[in-house]
Length: 313
Image (cartoon, rainbow, N blue to C red; front, side, top):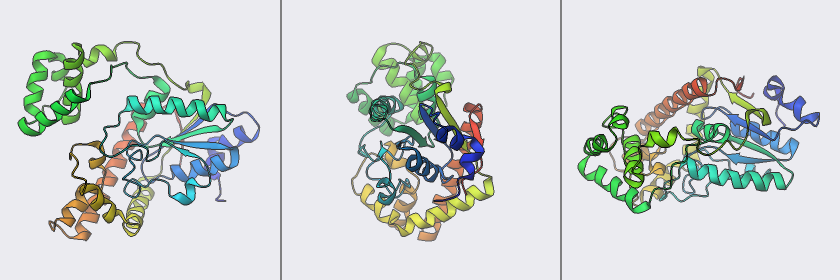
């Protein structure tokens, strides 16, 4: 068992070992910060079930590229909401909230401690602050808008959005594909702007702040970047290129969330002979570092009242 100095620093160990168990332990942090290892040690010590809060680790075809916990680790403690979605699907925060609500109920009924860990800040926000109650969007409409974006371009859809929801369109870049499509599908499906739903009471939090230990792992940048580079090399050795090849062979829409996993585009370029393997690896490492930086910014701006600790040793 590794030294749990980071747990002692956060006050988690004394809280759990004195029998004052919280309803859940929430562990957020940038990619490669050590979240999964810490969650596993807590789960083994305190009868926990680890629940995924990473928007890419939900996809079944992306075990290596998303650094999903390996089988040797998932055998040591229950792991839920990992790899349960096909890459051909569009998984949303609303679906995750519904899935995690069911898993929380099962975990608590079994007398186990929920340990929710991941790097998707929006998932934690939905968990602890609630979510606007936007109705489900019909899949045919979603697919039609996606096809139109491919054929006519996102600015054309932004112009259409401006006619239906001028205030919403004014807040978005004409090239912001994800947000333009989201705003347009909502207003076309419901007749109401997205902002109208966001101002409603919406869905309540699933876990109140006082019910959980909330922790952000915050390594120093040098340590984090070293971990990212080292882990990516390990991912290549573990079959990341082959995994990217298999995913690309499915012929999926390149705008699906799973197709945007770091490494898919870079290794696809290598496999097509457009760049060397070393160049593809360097590019993927750089994109991972940039992603970790964006995650850190989110955690500082949106989760400022969570506890902070350095990376687990």
